[in-house]
Image (tube, rainbow, N blue to C red; front, top):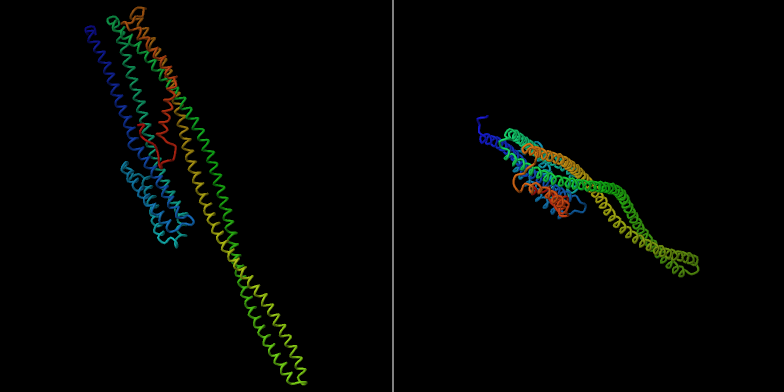
Length: 541
């Protein structure tokens, strides 16, 4: 080592440090490349697949709405044709989404969950074909169509929803795995870079100590640079600490807002459940009212039938009274003829004339009574006919009431079903918000951990400055010297920068930046339901 020149030793030292730096750079390059590859996999495959599955969910929901509309009470053949025409574009959109999904992920055709999804969709599509074929004769096949929609359709649709959820869970787990792999790669790269940096620093310090006598001026310059670097590191650590505190505060505020949102969703869920229960009770009451109305309709029909019988009997009585009136008239004529014959007979026919007169009187009384009875019967018949008409009108009104009650019962049943589905949907949203709340709290905890790490980093920077001061003492024998006229200003400048950074972080402009970042995050992950199947964007990547 004594025969080796100082230049050679310094070049060897520089070469060694350079090799360490190059190794650290290579490690950092490959680490960053691996991290970028993982994020590219997320943006190029996972997020598009999740978006397509969201579109499939929305399109299938629209298809179910059109199919279920066929079963509504009062639907005509024209309405059915309109609903059937609306289902065809939905079916084409679903088929197109499946083809696009297979283009993005060709391996999906061999995956069990995707095969289950395709099979469930083909079963539902086959069911839809059978249903559409029956709508050609809607009036005759209506009861069977309604039965298929209410009994078979939910089972087929549930199978499709379940398969969609399984496929979505797989893609989400793949995305999560990619993110975890990227984080692990990033942490490993940071660790390797720190290790290489620390190794280079230690080697440099050892060689510097060995060559302290011959290269004191050079080492003094290096010590001065290290001092300035220490101040810069302290300033950077201070800025990073302030940023981590702001991030922690923003995460805490986001967690509080999410907790309030979750509480509101829980209240909304309870209200929807209560509405669903009230709708079920209303449906039960409607069924009871429908039964009572149908019973009243039967009683009105029986009353009409009885009134018709009474009217027929009254007409028969009227005919019999007419016969009696005719008989009385004939008897009166015969009595008159008998009186004429008795008058011709003289004294011998007086007795016969008295009898004839009595018979005539009875015939006249019978005729008068028959007329009175006829008048009463006619009035009775007219009143019975009027009552029969009123009963017919009452039957028609009651029949319309029965139809209306049936419609109300069907609508109450639909409302109860819709309320139940809304309750399920809100529960799913609440679960998602709970997961997001958990993630936000995790981010807040991570920000606090970063703040703690930065505090340790500040301590390490202070230790580095102390070591540099000791190195200056070793080089100059107890006095601290700085090379160059700008050494003092270079030492004091980072302190001023640190003060300025504190003021800039505390200014209202920084709050405005945080709000704008929150708005950007809200635009990337929207919580509204304006567009069907909306998952988010990849602009952040």
